[in-house]
Image (cartoon, rainbow, N blue to C red):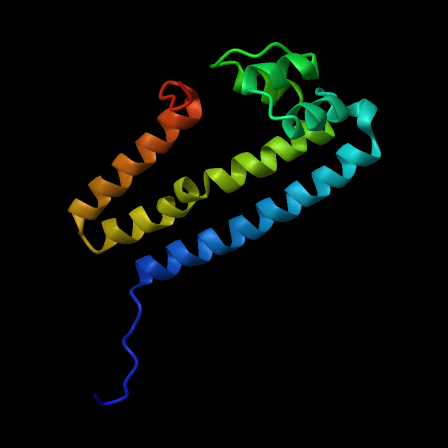
Length: 145
């Protein structure tokens, strides 16, 4: 072993830096949102006291939505999210959505780097993964049952 450190590929660096910074940003947004939710409980779409009570009592997701006073059906997430974006719980939803979709955003510069290096198999795999993420976020693919 010559002690020489192996060089990290630019694709990995772009991906890692993007995941790192978006994750930090989503955590800060979510933390700020939780402070605002608790400081201004009347300014939310969902009643935080009812939601926390239902969650800590082990209610099922449909029961939690009913306790919060907002009936929810799969596919309604984006309508609810857009309508309440500028409320404290809308800000929390944005932070969580940003954090959960970080792979999508990190793959964008990675695909660009793969394309520049003409590694088309990895471009295809990355775009396929991005498509799966978009389908899951759209509600078309649902694992909740």
